[in-house]
Image (cartoon, rainbow, N blue to C red):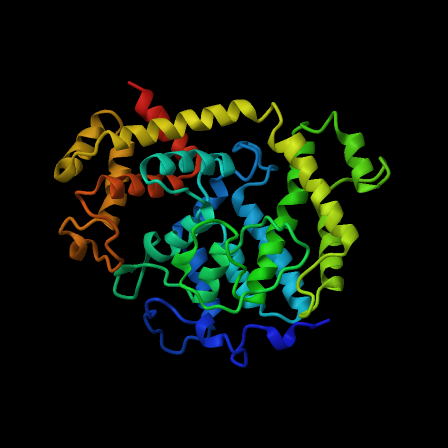
Length: 400
């Protein structure tokens, strides 16, 4: 127990100054009793990107079913799992909590399918992939706004350690050992998911907790929805449990957390036993074959593409250089909801001479005469939508 205490994120750590560094200084609060990571935590949970997660798909599109996991519930699971692991190992739980609640703020509507669709748009018009880890960092650094004491709106300006945890959290772990990197890199150097190891042990814990969280909950939801009715015998055999026992998220999480804590060390890294790691990979393969690629999900995927493509193309067709804003205002004849919502987003990102009036202190992101910048703005805008808002916009566009 507490095997990692000498490596926790605290002032005695050689990386500490880098960990708590920020791109922009936060406004000061007198007598603030919070640490840097606690301040990050509260800034994240007060952001609109975090709040919208409760209406975004995790795996199954089922907004009317309160018992199916949404993105916000997944984030809560990751926070809980990472806290248990970090606390047992002696790491900084304030940092794991902040990374956990922030790690998925860049997720699109409709889960990973929405991410794939936006990536198609991005590859076509921006010549680069869209991936939610990078989008999450962009939201924290550029898009999300909070009001300060004087009602000026500015970006979240999180610490380096939390920002690194967001972009480094990709849950796909192919080797059974995870250690942090030593290099203090510019996070803009990331060009694809999982390119670098996280900078802190705490971010490594969140990375593994992300996988522990979804691998079991997806099975539980699939059972609830009847998707695994014809595969339960296979599941019981895979987990080596009796059919009279329950297959649920709690049992799997307990087993994996305990195994990880018992087998990890600063020299070996965060790792499972060979038995647990092998089981984890078998469950992952089972899920991909029988859940993520099942026939029940395919109709919703086609619907998601229809919805997001119509929104993207409707906005893209409004581009007209300096006249784009007028075109967007005229869009209200087709969809007032889309016109007003996107114009509000545009004002945050472009310089239309009203930034003082809007009390904006965030960075100007885009050039008005750049079509590439405009397409990037559309992708940012769509990625922030909830499932139901995207559907409402689509219905507004096609309605009369």
